[in-house]
Structure formats: C-alpha cells, structure tokens
Amino acid sequence: MITKKDILHIAKLCNIKIEESEISKFQNQLAQIIDYINILNEVDTEDIDSFFEVNDLATVLREDTTDISLDFDDIKINAINTDKTQIKVNKVL
Amino acid sequence: MIDKLKEQIDNKKISVEDVAKEYISKAKKLNPELNAYISITEDYALSHLSYSPQNKLSGIPGIIKDNINIKGLRTTAGSRILENYISPYSASVVLNLSDFTLVGKGNMDAFAFGSSTENSGYGVTHNPLDKTRVAGGSSGGVAAAIASGSALFGIGTDTGGSVRQPASFCGVVGLKPTYGLCSRYGLIAMGSSFDTPGVITRNVYDSAYVLNEIAKYDKKDSTSMKVAKQDYTKFRDIKDLRVGVLNFSEEGVDSDVIDAFSNSIKTIKSLGCKVKTIDLPHLKYSLAVYYILVPSEISANLARYDGIRFGNHPEKTEDNNFESLSDFYVEARSKFEDEVKRRIIIGTYTLSSGYYDAYFNKALKVRNIIKQEIKNAFLDVDVIISPTTPSVAFKIGKKIENPLSMYLSDIFTVSSNIAGIPAISIPNGYYNKLPTGLQIMGRSFGESTILSLANFIEQKLWK
Image (cartoon, rainbow over all chains, first blue to last red; front, side, top):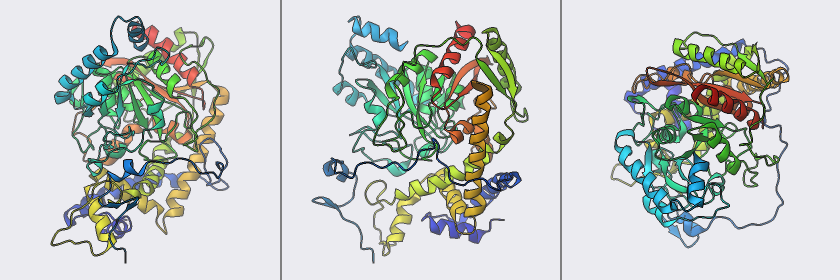
C-alpha cells in the first residue's frame, strides 16, 4: 500500500512538488498502477538474466579523439545567465 | 502520393514554393479546429526552400513531431517546461530528409507520455474524422495533419505505440521501424531503450518511400545499427508468407475491432498467405513490463530538466529566493504536466531502494522472456498480426481521469517496443466513419516483409 508519506518521500527524491490537495489523487492513481504491475509476480524468472540490450550489442565505444561539438552561441540562448563560454548558476553551497 | 508530387515538381508542373504555400495555408486554415500543430513554421519554410532532383523528399511537405529537434526552431516536446526552448542542433532523422518543406511541428502529449494528446501543454488535438474524439497519441498532431491533408508525411516517435495508435485512430498508416534502424539522435528522450522515430503517411508506399531516407546508420547514436541499404518501396511477393494470428483475449476489445480483424484475416488468406494462430503466453505481461521500465527510464531522462541550462527558469520572488539549489529545481520542475509528474514518480518509486529488485529487475527479466518468446515465434511464422488498438478513437475526456484505462489502449502495441521489432498499422475497416487498424509485426530489420504484406492488403481492401 502506498501511503501519503511514501508519495511525499518519492516526490522529494525526484524534486517534484505535489500540492497537499493533489496527494490523495496521486496516491490512488499510483496504487492502481502498482496493483496492475504486480501481475509480474506470476512470472517465474528464476535463472533469467536481468541484463537486457535490444539488439544484443556489446559496449559501443568510439575512438577517443576530439571532434567538433555544439556551438556555445547556439546553446547559450536557452540559459538564464551566461558569461563568455560558461553558464552561470546559483550558489550551490 | 509523394512520388506523384515529386514527379510534378521535377517536371516543373508546380514549384516548390507553390507547394509550400498550398500546404501551409491548409495547415493554417485547419489548425484552429484540429490543433494538430504546436507551431506552423511558415517563415522558416519559405526562407529554407531548396530543390535538388536527386533528393527524394525535395519540396515535399512534412510535419515533424515537436519532440524532434530542428536547429533554430522552438522544440517544446508538448510541455510548457520547454515553451521557450530553441534547438541548438537538428536531429539526424531530420537531416536525412534533405530539402523537405517543413509545414510545422506536431502536437503531442507532453514528453510523449500519453495516448490521446490530452496531456499536451498546448491543448488537445481533435480527430479530423470526428472532432469530439481524440486523434490518439502521443503523435496525435502528426496523425491528424496527415489525415486532414496539411502534410504528406510526418515523423513521429514511438515508445509504446505512439506512431501506430494515432495512425489507427485517424485512418492513416503508421510505421515503427526496428530499434536501431533509424537514429534517435536529436529526439527528446523518453524511454531510451524503447524510443524510435517512426513514419506516418496516407499509404504504405509513402511509408516505405520515407523509410528509405531515414533508415541510416548514425555514429551519434550508439544503439544505431549498420544495416545493408535497401529499397523498401520494392515490395516482395507475399504468396506463401507465413502469417501468425495473435491469439488474444477479446475482453475489453470492441466488437467492431474484432470484426475488422476477422475480415483482414480473410483478406490475407485470399492473398495466398499461410495463416495460423499463434500463442504468446507472456505477451499479457508486456504492458506491466512497459509501465515499470519506461517510467524508470523517464525518471532518469527527465532529471536533466533542472531549469539552469534550458527550460523553465523560475523567477526569484519575495517568498522564494532559492536559498538552496534544491528549492530552485523543485520550482523549475513545477511546470511539468500532471502525467509527466506521475511517470517520474512511478519511475522513481520502481527504482528506489527496497523496490528496485521487485520491480525494475523483475521487469527486465520478464522483458528478456518476452523478447525470446517473440524471437522463437518468428521461427514458425514470418509476421504476426493483431488489431492495433482495442477500440476506435475514444471521446475527448473519457479516459483522462483514469491513467490505467488510458495505458490499456497500448495493449497491442507495446510488445514490439519491448522486443525492439518493427510494426506497422494500416486502416482495415470503418465503423460509423471511425477507422480501425491492423497491426503487422515483423522480425528485427524485417521492414521489407511487413511493408510488402501491408501494401498488398491495402491494395485489396481499398483500391
């Protein structure tokens, strides 16, 4: 059972604000979804690998060489505050 | 249709500029009632007109879903959190459509989370065949634009049916290629191990025509596969093709959908294919696997929306001056739409300590079982058919308050994303003017086979 406390804890983990008035709605909807996905408990997965890759590719690596990347002038238009080739942010600590 | 217009352009019967103006004016006229476009890019289109006869889509009008980046244009992903985001680069799939004319960017559920476009931050898209109904989703805008004729082809994205389901609801053709055939570079990520760009067109030939352009290895996508170049418009002989009919529970499936499906089986038999019923007992777990793994990937992919480098930048107020960075993040992310919040929360839950093994790892294991089961089935048959969706397009508002019932509309489509295989949806019937869809799934990189069968069914049914 998902409690109100669970919802608030998860919301905090993912930096999502949930209004007090929305908690029970999210709680009910989540409970329904969790109830549905519990159907997987029926499946015997003993000895099944949990590693998955769609096309069975192994690790894909490129040559470790430099290449032209995005132009900072194209990127900076989306940031609040920039300085030369840097994006300025709030103080972290 | 596309090749006819291309021929007219090549023969100077019509100019690229006139084509652009015609389709853009149609899009502008229809958009107030359909809301298929988040942006109609008239200025961009008219200032970027170019024509080269060797480029197959030169001058052909297309719509691109708004979660696919085009340099210099706004890309919202259907979310208000990106309403001012200007793409600094173009997706590879867009660059592969050399010289096409961009009519505009297609409406969609925010971040492609949904099956109706009702989760769009820019209003719902209306189904052109019945405006009180949804156009499907998440690529609802693209499907509505193709069905109403304001563009000849559209590029959407398909993570669990987001190209095929709206195509089915709008009576057009939707193709989800094999994972790795078309580059994901420049698509706004949802579930990275499920996402693939896809094609929506009026007919199967056009679908193959566009696939020819976008099926290309891309070093910028590390899951891109090197596949021998082929011409998908050269349809194969399908006589003696082994067609597996998926044995599915009819519970919750509309009788109209079942009727249309039975008729399609008859059509397929009349084409000389060998039809047999196949059981895939683990397919009933696909949706549960999907709704664990995709939200898990979503919760990680959407962590980047922190409001600093791009996206919604919250303003400082007297009440909130963001003393901690975390306060800033929470405020920036408060613009996420409800369904986006819901999926991030589900994914955070299924990945959280204490639940990771029970949900995420368990789902990965079942994903492996389903993938293997489908692979084994293809030893016996060449394609697998099913309906595309359990119902025709539903009324706007009918499912929005009940996310689980909305999720169930993906029941037939998610399996191919789980296994990474290609699938196409084509119209196979109309009931009270509303279309139903037939889904054909194929082996990995077996696009040519599903397109060929789809083409011959289409010819038989509609020509």
